[in-house]
Length: 522
Image 1 (cartoon, rainbow, N blue to C red):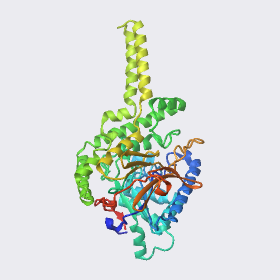
Image 2: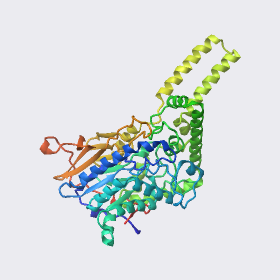
Image 3: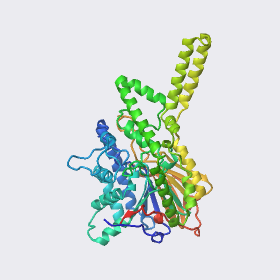
Image 4: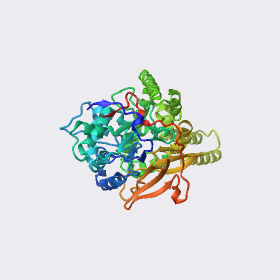
């Protein structure tokens, strides 16, 4: 399958109508290699597939002003990172599995991700058929990469995705020109999508220290560049969350030390020992990642990342300095340092508890101070540690992305700053004339907790141009179709002002965003 660069911005109509959603996490249910008990929970995932497919049909059949939709999926459409599957005996992969991959499932090499992509397309066939119908009827599709589908870095993963749609497209694509036109409407973004003055879209994980990567344009492991480098969240997902019954797909996000202690007690001695062992292995992997990113190989990757930034800046006519300023807004990955790792897995707090206990025992055993003083000291230490434990939190991703959007708005002129990642829908004005939207998500969390599955927001954003004015609506999909959640301004006929955009503002479309490695199949 040939590969070409993306078409230039002149091929995109000035007043394009946009449909955006995020965080579907197709394949998050393919975890039976590490979590065989989740098989009974697949019904909820199938319901989400039907709802998403119905939404795609709805907009596919309803153009605005006879203009096709540009569907932008702002990351985590395919959950490569959240999958835990093994290769079939009759379909072996080319790259030998590491011990970690034999234990936790296929990894992130070029061939492993193709196997995963095909498994996702087969499991979620209905969604892929509806996406294929959407593209076949003249609408376009843009995939912005998130942290769970970082594997789209590999051309093989992108080719496998396009091939899955080609195989499910209605009618025949045997004619080369017909197939070429179909594939030309499918595009990928390694980082962000941007239409100057109107729209900026990225997944948002780079503002979350537990999910951010050191090099977005070069996200490879310095030790083994055949594989993607794991973030803190990736390591915890594979080493701890997947093999531990009772930990949902949201993983570490809402957990405190007290929660893990309570879980360990509930699991009994054997279960607690297994949980501790998994945590120990995860911390070891995090420390290895930290050391790897201090190596000579990591320096070479940072130099290549800088070169890609330069090429990208030239193509976007934004300049390297502006793109570098964007990267300066990112959160520093947890795996960048020894102490951040200890803090994020509560080992600093656990060490403080152990040190306090030893201090109290030592004072009582040695009689250095009267026992009457030790008791108040122990009480004070206990209160302080309890307050620390209750207040301890890894990160507030919702607030972090909101802050990141505020700072992006100062660098990238746009009416709408759009992100995903948190699964929490938001639409609010951040500065005058600029609206921040978080798209929420379609993913279902806690698949193994019967009766307490958290409902997905099923939210999406519609941006339509009416008389030259862009109008944005955050909508939720339900059994009765889309319902309005929030709007940037009701149209004039409804009596409320819509956010205007000057017709003479310069526009740079993200179809010219790619680096040499940021290509699509065509």
